Length: 468
Image (cartoon, rainbow, N blue to C red; front, side, top):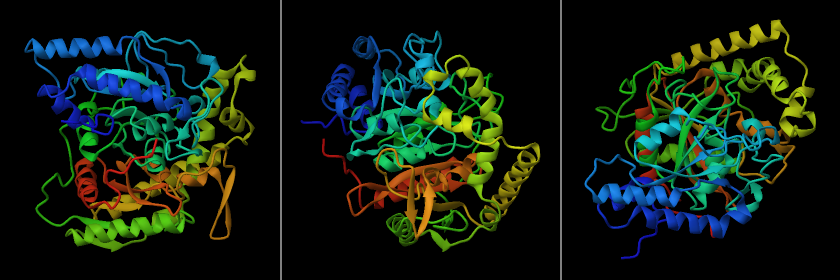
């Protein structure tokens, strides 16, 4: 029997290891070989874990001895280099943190290990995790496995590229405005930004602004997202936002007793969207309707009243600038593009800050009204497919947009904290993946996981991989 280990998802790999069809060492070796073959051109992996093979061998020995094993026993996983990893370099995409080795694991990393997963490597990110493309002065630029001349997104772009290229089956990323969902869309993998606070941010840097940062899994399949989410969610006694028990869920679950009610949109105040991206969202809406969901084209007045990207920018400048100034003081020559860009932005006045906070409150009110009538919202992940490197601006519908406009469809849900999921459902005319985004009410992760699983089964692009 020939098993394609580098394209199997984590759930399948765990079953193969548990039933003795393959060993953890074989799985680890296959991914290490893939990294050796493909990472030089992609630059997704920035640090290999010393002792990964030995840990895999220990996992095999534990299984052979009849020990109790976790749901990811012996399965490799990778982690964005903003997560602390005990004894393994965590350099945060900056020469300022070069050589930094934490003593303890981030909560999310520790929970993956507790489930039996084996840390394989750390993945690339933008400087301080702040930008929509993955590049920095310390570990360089990550390329998209589908086209090396294009971005894999940011800020979890190294993680998305590693999974898409077959270097890793499962990983951890963080999301401030787009950072697991956008990279997943750019490279054709899946990612979940759970409700704010569901997955503790303990041991992940930076934290400012704490109200917007989320951690989340990235994977090859929706069932892997569901499994990882179940392992990662829940309070840890350290993150003050992580207070709701993992078992609490307000969603439809996997077997709803009525049709799911889904609204879809491609604009509604979010600005212009690429025509192929919009067509992919419409195709996903049609697929859900054919599968029995109640699907309607919708508009959301709150998005048309307050521009989420403008609100996010005003809040971000006010809260992040002081933190970055503290970190970069005395290291100004080691600052990269975003920290220099942020330093040059005009300060947010207190009046603007309060106004932005009130705008966010209006967004929350608007979505509270929306979710009285619908279980989920379907919309684009990014406004354009993966773009060329160092994109400063682009034109859509005759309008010139700044690079950060790619996140106008993801930012709202960092501001409100709603759970949101990214998955591929289409392909651009030049062969790049196109994703769709599913959003649910707070603590209703089961709703979007159920709908995403349904869409996955109907996807016209299932089991497609970059030719590397």
